[in-house]
Image (tube, rainbow, N blue to C red; front, side, top):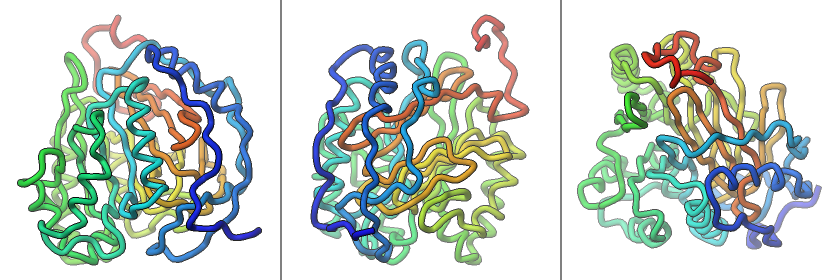
Length: 357
């Protein structure tokens, strides 16, 4: 298969959904999912090199209409998740423009950055010129929201403390530590807690990883929120170029299962994937923020794409909503999951009418 020209962006601009109510927007995903899906040329260059051109989708297929649900209204809490945004260029610009357009039909209140925030060697200080690149790139009016950031392997090539310290100088950047947690009010009577991990430290089995994992287990065990979401850079499951990272999987997967985590968000593989796991939680890979790579479909794949894009996540009391957004074509795939599908010991709901699914 011929190699893509990395200097060229994806060609053609599919129709974007017009401004409309949330229900109509997500219903339109069914039509978007039936657009012609082409095989795109492969790229297998090193992780440190940008790929602005499209990549192939091995085994890609259109999503049947019946798999795309219509959500009953908007969520109590919604955010975007994307990683590997560290390259400038046309690919990232198309993703950022899509984030802006998406906000008019799928509103969100924050962004989770899933690591490799700066290529190829992170940042060196809080005065590094790459910070102005970040501020300019994500300067749209709908992006004046908190950006909760995780560290990736390329960020570790630079000064990771500078990314922590930048939180004090930015109105949007949020990284109070190399790993941290925060709680969002997702609706009246329920909250969501996010546990942001430094998975590169875990992957390297550094001495500090023992302390981090002890912290992680303690925070999970003490948390009484309805929704628990873990954010990291390296996936525990993936059918992309890197695949699931065994050391990270061995370190955190049992903890996520045992303590009722519903969703694990990661990047590292430069694609979009939704994977089912036998441990209950969902694995979302969203690493197509500034370049893309070849990937394939596996038995655990619910959706996959190797085009630039990101994931919109919505939370209701008893339901998780996911919309995968292509930077050119708009929303391609949507899926809704009941909390009890993902967490065997889901917290009880006091109001039986509210808890009906």
